[in-house]
Image (cartoon, rainbow, N blue to C red; front, side, top):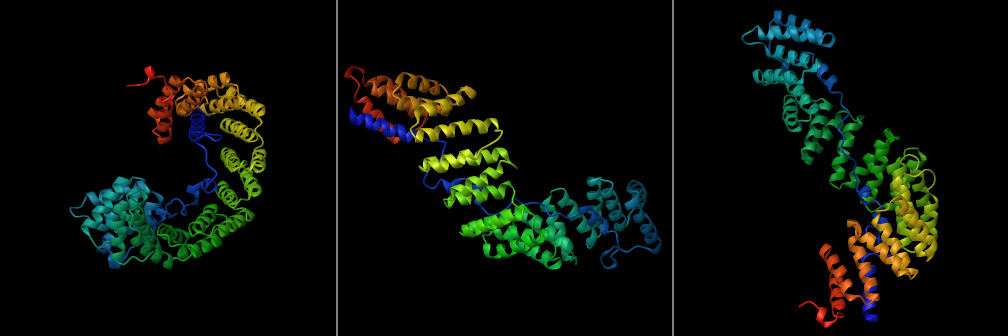
Length: 469
């Protein structure tokens, strides 16, 4: 019997001890506080290119890459194009009449009509006019570029790549053309082509942060941290208040296994006033990973201002980690930092974690009061009911423990663990048949070698006439 009871306690602990299954274990838990935030690289954002300006800038005539116009047509062209900026709707009418009134309208007029349509926000008609212009005059550089810009602005990266590449092949050397091509190639997954285009854009316009950030993303995706780091330093010099750059810099250092340097970078960002909730959260995680509990709790407390729900979550989660690691004074300090008005979820999490701390200190009556306050707010909280049952077990109040576990058993999220706890109690009471039922239910929800072995041992204690065939 003692051996069976030992097995019961072992299985119950494996299935959910002082910290429930959805919590963290002490070993390696600190590094998992927010593992996703430790992956270098920030979300891709489109370049801050003024596409309207690019279209407007294309109005100047390029004689070497333009369809020929008679002197009379050129004079009309110049006058009509002047209307696009001031009266795009009138320009559309005039150019539409001129294009529609000729058997073979000049591609130059079709191109101008495309500009007018674009200015008037008639994007589909602008595309049709630009497309017609390049079909009638394949060397029409400006029309190819405008068509590429239009496709970029409407999230048609594959089409934009073809048009922008054609404009470059015809002699365009504008940095924006290279940069937009780089971005579109990046969205298509062509990182080598994107890198080449971004390099051309950055060399043509070295002050543009857009193209440098494009290169940065390519380097980070390729794990070229040695190339990414100096670029990050340069970008931070240009944009010292850009919190995302500081976060990215720290992420690169962490990915390169230089966590102490990452911590120094984030401390510098904090001093410079460029640390938002994300940067502070990562700094807190690094402090926690280094065992600096006071510093970690202090940083997490700061997040309570700009992002209260996240700050609550960080502090409470960190306290749970400290409790699991047996660092109870530090856990108490972390919980003390959770002050002020709490969100409903934060209130529940705080009560649960306070209970866990009191249980770790074996202060059972105090722990019971905390968890009962939680259950009063959330009567169907499965984890809280499991915790209450475990407290009653420690207080040797099995009837109340059974009631708490049975209530948790009826809640899907806690049925498995509650079943194991109830099996434990039934074995103590020598009700082996009931224990078998609970264990079979648990195994139907989640297979486990330990629980199957436990079930076999309990079945061996059943009277012969009640054993299954």
